[in-house]
Image (cartoon, rainbow, N blue to C red; front, side, top):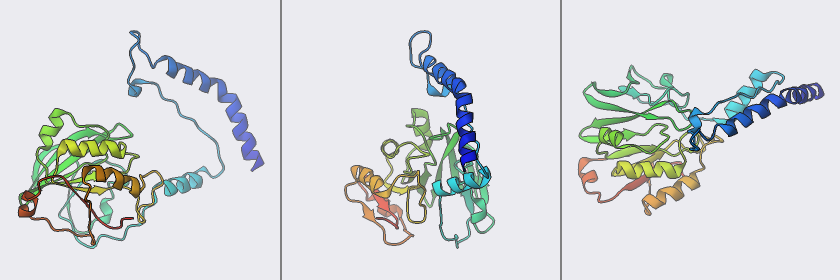
Length: 255
């Protein structure tokens, strides 16, 4: 343990000048030649490498602690699977039973009689592509926000169109903050919001938003949250047409 500490300390001293120069360059580049702010995505990046013993096992334990999930297997077979982006918590196709058709592209298509539209957006943390999917089933339009990281522009809102049921991700990291997702919900204006992708007993991801904070934000959208008692809910067109305002329905487990 002492040897590892000495190695880390020596490495830090040896590379400290380079790190200071890199930080100074970043600070200088925050303003362009006109004195205007520069988008942080245009700023330089550097990596900090810390040597450690058995780094593979340590890294695995850290990642498992940050993204711990323990959901039971999916019993029903699926006909269609849409992938909003290619991250481990969104692309576990092997967990889905049956022989579903996989959709992972932007654009409109009809899959097994179901109209699907994938709208290109940007991921919340990694600035990569995220796809907001809209599906229409029995006249009911369902939308999944994926890990969206920004408010929608006019073109994107027009592509999404009217939405009956919105599955909105409220995890915080790696999505935008829950308050920002709430603003996206107000932009889309669905009849029903179903919050997903936040911390639960089966998804004890350290970086995800705690449920009490999610529910506080949801109450700003709907002060009369509907706490569902089972993991299944049935919606009819008549029921949706009768709703005069945004309704938030929360599936268990809740706190």
